[in-house]
Length: 452
Image 1 (cartoon, rainbow, N blue to C red):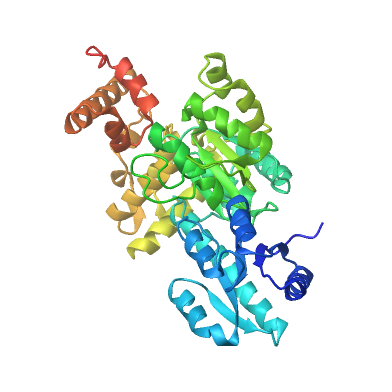
Image 2: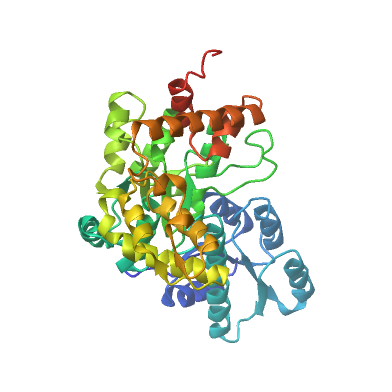
């Protein structure tokens, strides 16, 4: 089946002219729905999901301008191109001042003029959607394939990514924090049939529970206190692309049922809405938790687990990829040297040995932070003095004494953060960069829950 360039709603009361335009647009690869009056046009606008509306200004029942103004009340409304008789040009110009894309006069002299305008409008909308999704995403770019899959332990991962990328199967990326789960997800996306669509990421642990449903599915105006206008959710922003649900294990059980419905039926509704919206997206989820264990402890739905776990990809921690360290180090030195205007030739043998010996609890993300600091502190080469104390320690920071020191420091850091936020755990977790569940575990571990 030929892929469509976009979906267009055509509203025109002249049956002959409507049929003429429909044939032109469909022959050029667009999917077209039609309406012969304003009432049907309004109904289709509420029910459908259109990339563009082409409407006559003068329609029976409800004018094209009224339809346009009503649609503007909804965030994510489709762009309008108006058709008008020569004598109504002033009204069309007024519509453009209110936000319509353009207008064409009837009769249509050259169909290519319409097709060029339609193509330009839909492509512009797609670019704007892509920009928004990228702007909200944490990742600024992808490393080269050789860098991403560096090390023997990553060879099976490379094969799995190559196998699944060409499909639209759900993928579950599993690995410790900092192993590059989002980077792998982006790699799968770019090589997939949805690769030209947007990549929209959402960290399920970073959004308060009462707002997470709206972030995922959007909301209608007045759906709850503070919803002063309609808002698209991540599933709508990801239309034709991929949605990446990071830390899926942190999603509340009450919301897991709604996500399951999307995966099963490929439709969803905005909060406060009744219109079903198609979920034309690929879903890639990620977790640093053992979801099978979470299921056994009734913190994660078993049916959702099986839906997400269609194709699992396990990422090895950096401590199992020591053979990749020289390549990763060279990459980060070059990157940060360029950003800071410094030329750092490499790493001394003693410093490299310390980096290889370290256990890297923060994985590649921690390595990146360590080397950025090292570039700042170094002149020609990175020496041992430019590395943090826990890396310079001969046993890699794994001795009982050092572990106790780290725990004491972590406990003190949590206590101070709690103090700064008046005991508010959500704000404390946000500052520390951990999920609220992780903070809860730490509070229990360090005996800080006596007052609960």
